[in-house]
Length: 218
Length: 243
Image (tube, rainbow over all chains, first blue to last red; front, top):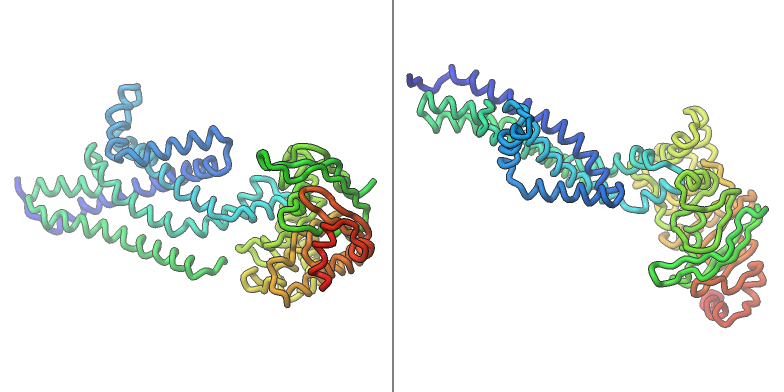
């Protein structure tokens, strides 16, 4: 039965949007946690760990996200791990954002001058104390802009999970299109909903970057 | 037992030797100026004393600690050996008071009230009692360096190392920093100063060490060393400074 696109379609899209946002948040939190650990391992870990993490980052950054998604949805079951679409989506997006966030944050940690480490050394701080009180607070300031910027990428990239049947915003749009055959109305509305989420993040990111280039350190 | 004893200290970067057997002994209350050309190894020697640089041969004992590569040993040593750097190296995200109390708080477990008293004490010693709330980028270079000295003092060090602490300052700002150091010397602080300020070395240091090509080339009381240099290298080095 063909229905026409109208107000009744909005709840379906909003439901999809909710899953897009939830998946993005999950990805950001999990990717952020692993990303931080990887960034630390990459900047101050032993040599073998640095190499291992560098290898991971290179590998994941050179792989299309869609392939990561297919690997976790289609390939992992062959190893006995079956994941429903939501979990497979979260796993592959986390693997993806871990690699990018680790790389962004490593750069921010390494941007802190060596003399700051030395000053903290000379004051008898332990490695953990140096990171917690001296290095990471400064690295965090530099990292805010690019990190929020990357959140925009995460939100948009959740759309690939439509391909394994996870009903987020894009998949909801596809379903709606097959009911209405009004692709312009449907997909322009979908695009508008992405814009509503992403644009404020972009603005925020720019503002954080501007504040940084304005130069105040505190 | 001397406050600092360096024996046959040797260090190289790869195959390039930078310290070729340094022997130096510093008693409690001594102020030692280390002079010499860039590349003579004076800063490297200073940085070996608190373990910022590793060395390949010889030994260093300072404030009752032996320098080795164990992090725990080095941290114990650094609680009692302060260092002030050429580029101040204040923590830009912390204000003056936080810069000063960070290490006493997290390393020694000093409490809030005690920390406040500490800030007042060390800031008044460097003449900046009114700057506790300022951030480093709101201060002049000379003020930043005095805060760096205060930050180091707050750990109550037995020995203080100064690594060309006025070299990054405009000439009109070096005076205030040198005055602060001279006051510490008068108060009996044991100090090793790597410096380019010959006049200051002569006036404040009890002894001066001239380093050349990775060795201690000449050493003596500051007066004797500056007025009667024995080696042609030292004579050539201090001649332009005597004018």
